[in-house]
Image (tube, rainbow, N blue to C red; front, side, top):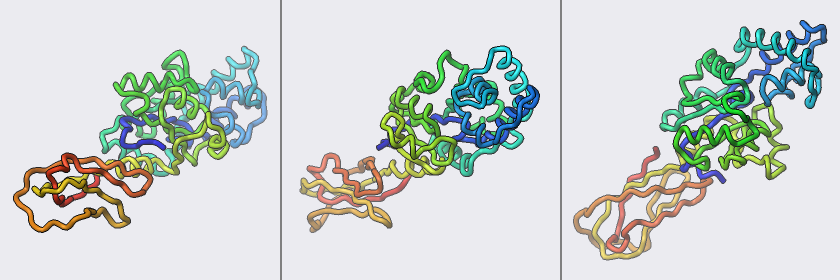
Length: 305
């Protein structure tokens, strides 16, 4: 299980995670095929070829084979047509998935830096983000040609963590494909799989090497989990000669104090203490008071943030 309170940054895949870009990628692939005297491919077929960068997509679209490699001169001619068309029509029909912008905005409000780690070239990735007015949310974009390796290597994620000055185990990767799962595990990042992208998350979840730590149906869910896992409990401490610790228990309609002895009287307030309660999976959360030896009774004011 991901310890969401420890997440200090979130990295996102682009195609199939933030945006549905298949309509424009399929149009570019078919423009290329028609220019070279080939028949068009169904959009669903092109969808199955997406995820390993433009060069691999061109090879697959030219050969109509997931593992195909086009002859070099054919690949060069095809790439020229594909890239020219795609650059001019990169956001004609590409759209963010529902709640993408809402989720990014909410995460940004928590002060968490966000990144894009994609196998699309960095120039095309940035152009697409700008066209869809999403670039404002991201501190860093790493494309398939930014480094000398790409996903499924974990190096792009290690690079992002290094730039942000954090450990990879404190950065959540969000993606839809096998490459995303493998890259996250290679880098030591917790990983969330989206259920709405191009990858078969049910199939990926069957294997330990590609199983996500968390499944989400929208980016807003990350915010909901992250914010509700950072419950701050503020106690007013009263001077009582009682050494038993107090605890906080979660309930459906809020949080209540539990104690084993009812105080008889109390003197002046001696101070306050802050305590972070790790609220995991909606279950009961218990946290002992600090310096409980001088505490008889604590009155709690609880707030989310």
